[in-house]
Length: 308
Length: 301
Image 1 (cartoon, rainbow over the protein chains, first blue to last red):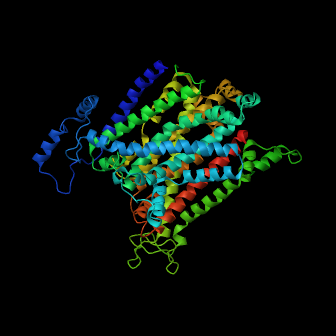
Image 2 (spheres, rainbow over the protein chains, first blue to last red):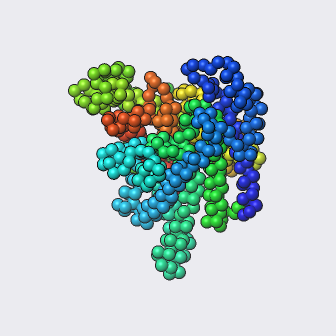
């Protein structure tokens, strides 16, 4: 287990390096620069600015300078948000993004497995069909459609909830963005759970558990659900990636002071350090979460041996 | 000129008297057409596709005509603005249909790109096995763990919004799962006798892959294709929603939804109609995909 963990951590270093390299060169090869304005700067001033940010050096040298800096945790200053370092901006935005994203994943797992298991236990009943129709709707309606529609209904027509903003993090501001992020994932997880639960309920060990006289509740909770959760656990990695990507849009729609919106703004403004910082941050987050998911999988399913 | 059937009949005079066998594909088709949701979905998709193709004949309004006196007008039958007009006074119905053209085209073409890359890659990897397979699949694993959407977004931002780039970028993202599916299938197929026979007959590796392996992995591939198309349409809409997708004068459902979302308090129809079209299309593709899966893989019915 420990060996596996160390190997995985080591294996993620080249992955991260690939992410950094692609993002770095993709940003830089592209036309346009951070100081492109309608009114061009005098050449001396531009040269000075370039020098201050090491941008007068050859690209490959800049790349290694950048790598050296992030090794010691220095992501550089943001070009656009003067007086803020990228680290400041990311740390400032992280709490909001974490709350929204974390709550969305949490809701998705709880309600997804609950609905999925309910549908599987009453297969081909009205409850099953309604859960599956709802799940299909959740999958077919993307979150950038869901978000405005939810806002239209609950914010504008019913005026129950605020339309957008963060309101210093008070609860009612979080409901709509979390829902918009969570609904497609709830739908996905419900479908996954239903499928695997149906399969598990037909398996031999469930029959054994029932045959030895275990109460039905225990059979379901202790044996069936555990087996049925396996695909859900392995889906958590992609789910996190989807929620993170979704948060880019959701944070923009609801005007939430998180990290997601920095990415688009940064890319449009050619704010190289900010974009790189965001990409690296999300890259690390996804890699770490995938690792946790794989470890969890090993714990849940004894057939998967992690020392390989 | 003989058709396939008459040739067969000529070869086997009493073929008509024998019991007609059903191929796996015929079986699958029968099962698919018994699935009501899938059939209805196919019909709806066909209607949407036909509407997109014949868009200019379905509305009296041209795509870019600006009606200065009817800016952001609600749906109105007297002027044939069935879906209302947008904030520049253009007819929304015709824009939704032209958006359908772009969205469907991106979905199909990008899926085509992913299909070609994924099937070839997966078949080669699975067929050669060993070190080649190890290396190629390791590469796929690494690609999997990259935050891909971010690269696509970066690509669109830095290289400008170009519809050709959208196909390539989305196709390049979606081929990974396809490659994995095809590889898994290939691994089991390459041990079959007919592949061995081809080998013994001196057929080249490349020919075996394209003539014998790929046609036999088509089942799962078709299922995955019908699930990739909505995925791609969704991603394109996502990019367009962020303002990174297709550009004027082209439009897509994502662009229209994004415009509609900004004005939904004043002009909800600008959000609702494109959203209905997008959601319906995604719905239908998903139902067809599910139907195909049940039809081609009747194991868990």
